[in-house]
Image 1 (cartoon, one colour):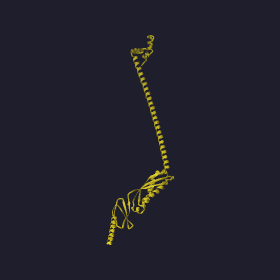
Image 2 (cartoon, rainbow, N blue to C red):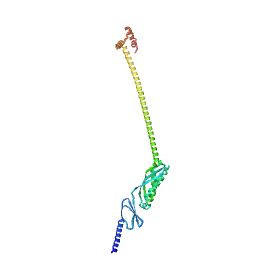
Image 3 (spheres, helix red, strand yellow):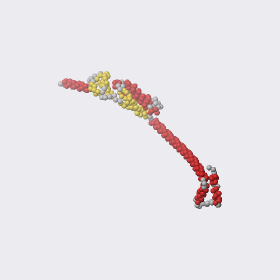
Image 4 (tube, rainbow, N blue to C red):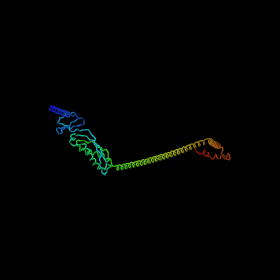
Length: 308
């Protein structure tokens, strides 16, 4: 009886193992995932996304590779620049698997290997640069690391998309010196900008004053020209009017009775002028004969006898 129970247990165990193997032989592979299958210890095939059935006890999935891009941190490390300054550098590697078979059999741990290769390459590149250029040549360092990792990735079955340096940290003494240098440079630029602004302001003011003086002088010159032209025009007009009036007076005097009328008009104007002097002293001729002689001195007879 005990023998029958033992045999049943053995067959039951074998059935359970067989069922487990049957379930394990069924594989559902998700997108961007690759399963590496070995048959009797040798590489057999790579399973892509989808449903797959394997042979129990013969086929075995030994590696499961994620084909998506992943970011791997490169831990901080000490590097010496070309001018013997110690800096702490860390970064990030962005890479993905392009050949699952090589990534499984070409190297034991491609992630660890990529990090180590990135660290050694970073140290070698920084060692050729001075401290000031180290901060400026981040792209050069990243490009060199990507180039070296791509060469190794041909064997490892990986593809490095980019390498980014997160921090380059110099010693505290160097940081203080750099901060002082930056502050001095900023102060120098501020002083230079202020002096340039003051210079430009003075130039603008002087140019404005120059333009103002020129405008004033041109305006003054034009005013004097206008005044001179007006004065000359006035003189010409007065001369023309005087000549015309003299000609008309001569015409009137030459007419019959014109001389007597002119004398009468002059006498009336003289008397009107004297009447306007109310509180002033009035000087009159001694007699009418003297007044008549004064009137004769006006040259009316000459005007009358003057030929036309």
